[in-house]
Amino acid sequence: MAQRAGGGLSRRAIITSALALSACGPKNAQGQSVPADLPPLKTVAPFRVGTCVQAMHLADPAMAALLAREVNQLTPEWEMKMEYIVQPDGSFRFDAPDRIAAFARAHGMGLLGHTLIWYAQAPPAFEQLDESRISFVDAYRNYILAVAGRYRGQVVGWDVVNEAVAEDGHGWRDSLWARKLGDFEHIALAYRTAREADPQAPLLLNDYNLEYNPTKRATFLKLAERLLASGAPLTGLGTQMHVAADIAPGQIREMMRDLASLGLPVHVSELDVSLTRAENKLLGRAELSRRQTAVYAEAAEAFMSLPQRQRFAFTLWGLRDRDSWLKKENGADAPAPFDDAGRPKAGAAALVEAFRG
Ligand code: G3I
Image 1 (cartoon, rainbow, N blue to C red):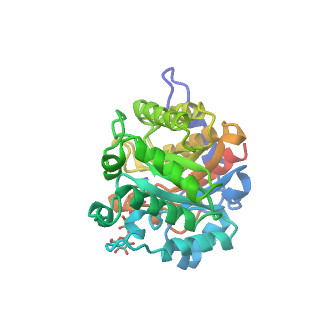
Image 2 (cartoon, rainbow, N blue to C red; image 1 turned 90 degrees about the horizontal axis):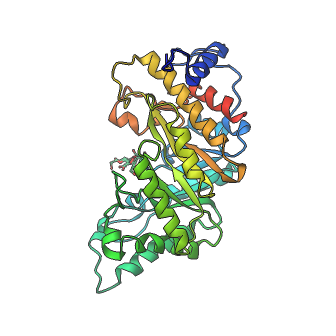
Image 3 (cartoon, rainbow, N blue to C red; image 1 turned 90 degrees about the vertical axis):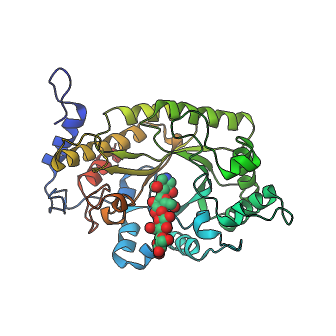
């Protein structure tokens, strides 16, 4: 149980104990009992609640039902990225993202475009571009115009550039895009081109570890300010929040306060709370689960503390444990707010509690 230096119980410990006591519903896979009548997340939040999704998930009736019940925004987990869209011959395929867009439309959900430009993905068609036939800048622009243009009027926003800041927070990432078009210019050009393709869509800058690394957070904010000063149509900030259950209490609140300082809408864009990535290897599973619940509570409360105009959306990176990307790293992880069967965990109850304000 998290104790304050003076021996008193931390706020987080009080929340988790209260949630544990309040729970009286059926037990889930973690042996946690949460209220049997827990309302859907989207019905209690005064902003959109989302999750990442893959086209194959939509063919699973249980998953489709869980999505329809709990969220009103979807982020394609990988099928709206270059790795899926750009074929070796330079052609584009859109079958999977179109299916996700159609499901979102059919269920009245927002679609968050993710992501146009990412240092981590530079397909061979770009790496080996024949620049005697087309300039690199035209190929770059054509991609953004084609993808953002295709979903014009369907998206609630775009992660135009993902993870532009260096891992250690000192400077920006190297990438094919930076090498070809300039460190800053390729980023500013991406926002201008996305705006050309879609005159209305909110255009966000998305990154991770902003709660763990104050240096990275400061560099992220400086990049955002430089984009704004250059006239680039940046209109929102995304903080991914892939965190571990033993993140120090208060780090998330501090990060949220800093991000809000620019006055732009903030998107909690990829929240999951890993048990197995916890640095403290001496915490038992039960303690890690308790801390996970409190981290969900802190993330939701920190977001709720923003003015309504700055609460863009609150997106989980997977509703069910079984679908999480983290399971590929460690099958024992259980980072999501719902268990493998889609039953709410204490983390889901904590989100509902906080969203209710
Ligand atoms: O489903 C196909 C499978 O049919 C195929 O056989 C296999 C081999 O190529 O690929 C499978 O697709 C994989 C997909 O995940 C689904 O599992 C892709 O290769 C793999 O690249 C993709 O990884 C995604 C990753 O981004 C890269 O796009 C993860 O699911 C996704 O969770 C992860 O998400 C990122 C965010 O976009 C940015 N922030 C960090 C976050 C976690 O890394």
